[in-house]
Length: 450
Image (cartoon, rainbow, N blue to C red):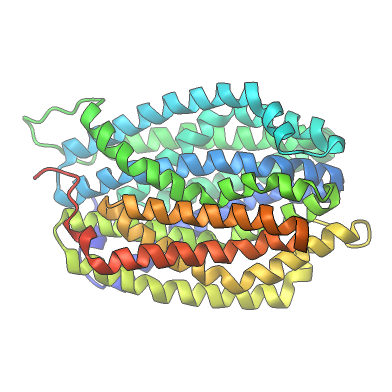
């Protein structure tokens, strides 16, 4: 078994080396989501891009449920790993896998039945409604693969093996790109083609990830007399207590998108296409921030499991330097190249309104990415400690601000009010979680025995 570097050595180096594969892996995951939009936007048309965009806010909620659930469940895994209790660590993994497999099947049935009603409630424009329903129907059929793939990735990260999910994400991203182009350009399948491509890519990666994880777990030797149950209700209870706030934290941006979708839809399909392109760019750019926060969560959990509280504090402080450096770089790149970025999705000559909306969103939001980075890292410490009540409240405040400002101000001040609310929510979230971090109460939280 490989020695776990997060428990010793340079804090900053350990955190960066662990976070970097997570950042790259999640960038690849966002990349193949972006490819869906780029392919339909450039080769099918503006309405097809709007249809995928109308579906995006809903599909991202389910993605973030999977990621958040995996992150929450992996806190137990990380703490047991840090404490050297490998038998309990394996049981926590098996419990999470079986639980989320069952949940994904339930959510699949829900999505297949109710997605037309949800799109209707969101006031999806009639000219793109049929394509949006078709995209979601296919997408929901592959939801169990999506869930298990993300749970496997979170488990590898909890074990300190963040490079393994990166390899699978690179593979699935490349596969998805080729399938997108084949189904759209060669077979002329349009919106259905990009949905099928995503399901196939995630399904293949999920199956391979499962095989590698099972083999990897064999390298952790539990005590000879120790039993390793496949399911533990008490671990489910403790994991759920962490997973639910983690799901909320990971899903805030996506739930906010969903709840303000009807506001954006009211401005028409052209505005929706531009907003969708801008949101794709934002989702890609905040990946380094979210991934760093997730790395801080695992770092904190492992070090608290090993009773190294001060090292956990140092990890949090080191994350600030990482976040500030990335936020400045991303802002400079987007301010210099926003036209080029949006033109990847929309032809300015054919969709002037859509191009203008997307461009306006990207140039505005790029100044504020540091806020979501600070929020993610602070939430990561609290999640890694299992101290979830306050950071769940902070994320709910974030969501409330985004939804209220968008719904109250957009009808008066225009679509720009939708994105003005985003940094306001991030700032409030960071302030609440940051104050709680300073109290130090998170260091006294205990979620594993021994």
